[in-house]
Structures are given as structure tokens and as C-alpha cells.
Amino acid sequence: MDKKGFIFDLDGVIVDTAKYHFLAWKKLANSIGVDFTETQNEQLKGVSRIRSLEKILEWGNKTLSEDEFNRLMSSKNQDYLNYIDAMDASEILPDVSKTLDFLIENNQAIALGSASKNAKPILKKVSLFEKFEAIVDGNDVSKAKPNPEVFLIGAQLLGLKPENCIVFEDSVAGIQAANTANMLSIGIGEEDVLHEADFIFKDFTEITQEFIEGIISGTTVKQPKNNLSIKN
Ligand code: BG6
Ligand code: MG
Image (cartoon, rainbow, N blue to C red; front, side, top):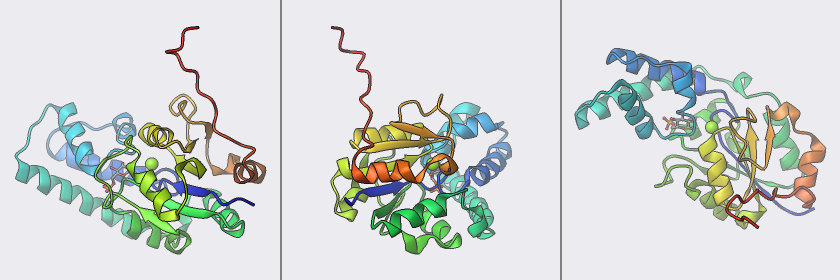
């Protein structure tokens, strides 16, 4: 069988940490008199820590000094880390471990491609750290998703060409990053949100062994996208 590179996003793909980001951002927002809803939290998926705080301030029409901005950002992260501290392997999303093990048994390369600067401690907490051949996280990139940098570094570390890599992502920015990198993009979540992905599944319980085998053997390939700019 051919060797392909499977690159996993972390938050929302491997573990449901969005609920902890929500609680920590809500506490911060409310402390400066800004409302923060679950819908707004959705819009922070895949978005870096700095950009997330900037967006919350925009929504609340607030400005902060640089010192205050940095103080709030690190206090949000401390609250988030307190939630992470209590995590264990029971928080791995359904069938993620099964998929990782199937790929490893079939001699496939596995990498992590996450915007989070907390990716490594989270992987250790849920006992998945050892399964990844390469880890690229928020500490390694200078350009955030939808820029493809995080996934391109992942492919490079695996020693594979981007066209031989597959990305699992739950955010729109992440799917766009994978598409720009010329990788096969697999959306994990809702079809109406992730419609730019080559394939979309609600979660890993919907992904069959046959589907993965098709990717490995090359029979499951990138979907041609409608190019609206071509008129004739
Ligand atoms: C992404 C999350 O994976 O990482 C975002 O979807 C989060 O919600 C971003 O803001 C940065 O995470 P962290 O852990 O570095 O604050
Ligand atoms: Mg995500």
C-alpha cells in the first residue's frame, strides 16, 4: 500500500475542547462587560488566541491598552488550562482512537496540525502524544489558518508531498488552509458550514474503513470544485 500523510486538527476533531474555550472566553468577556454567546464561540473555531480576543473586543466595541490585553489573554489561558488539567482519555471524540490505530496498523504517517499553543499538553493528557510522528502547533507557525503554513510544515516533517496528505478539520479556516495546500480536505461537522471540504462527515463514527482504504490506495481522490469564474 502507498504511504499517505494524515494530518489531524486537534480542537473539535480529536477532542471537544471548544466547550472549555467557551467557558474561559465567556468569563473574560463578562469581566469587561461584554456579552459572549455560543454562536460567537463558533466563530472563534480555528482562530488564534490573539485574534480571538481582538474579535471579542470588536464585538463589545472595547479597546484595551497593550498591557491589559496581554494580561487578559494570559488569564483566559490560565482558566482554560485549569479545565485541561482535568482531561483524560475519556474525552477523545468517538472513533478517533480507532481511526488513528487503523492508520498506524496500515503503516500510514500521522501528524497534528493545530492553531493551539496548548496542543502538546492536551495530547499528553489524553494519552495520544506518542501516536503522532509530527506535531505542528500554534508555537511553530507565523501565519494562522486559512494560511496553509501549518499543514505544509506537517507534510514536510512527514517527508511527504502535500498532494499525498489528507487533513481532518472542523473549522472553515482549516478546510480552506488544506485546500490551498492542495491536500484532500475532510470536514468533521456540519455540511452547511464545511461545504468547501472535499468530503464531510458528522464525526469519525461515520468514516468507514473502506473510505480510508480508498484514500490510501488512491481510488478516493480530491473532488473537482465548480469554478464559477469559467463562463463557457
Ligand atoms: C484552535 C481553537 O484550535 O486553537 C481555537 O479552535 C483556539 O478556539 C486556538 O483559540 C488557539 O488555542 P490556544 O490553546 O493556543 O489558546
Ligand atoms: Mg478545530
